[in-house]
Image 1 (cartoon, helix red, strand yellow):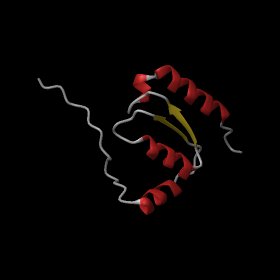
Image 2 (image 1 turned 135 degrees about the vertical axis):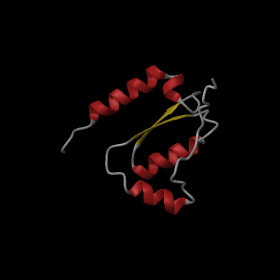
Image 3 (image 1 turned 60 degrees about the horizontal axis):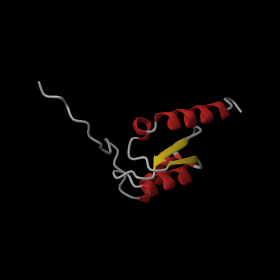
Image 4 (image 1 turned 180 degrees about the vertical axis):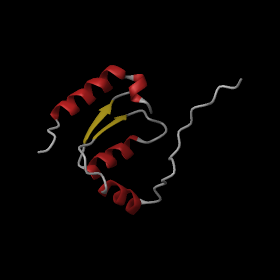
Length: 92
């Protein structure tokens, strides 16, 4: 029995340029946090920086972490998410 591999893909919605990315970001209406590893070899750190800027979101850079910071630095990721969630005031 073959074990399936894990692949990283862009999914069904490929962003073909800045306008497409900006249109997608414009649809985001909820509070957002961007976590990005500085040593990500799949999605460059600059992409995370641009995403955070485009969303008006906080960017937490995880120094030395790669593509999946939740697996590589779970304590840091969980603490960052907890802090973020605790700062959200629903309905205001």
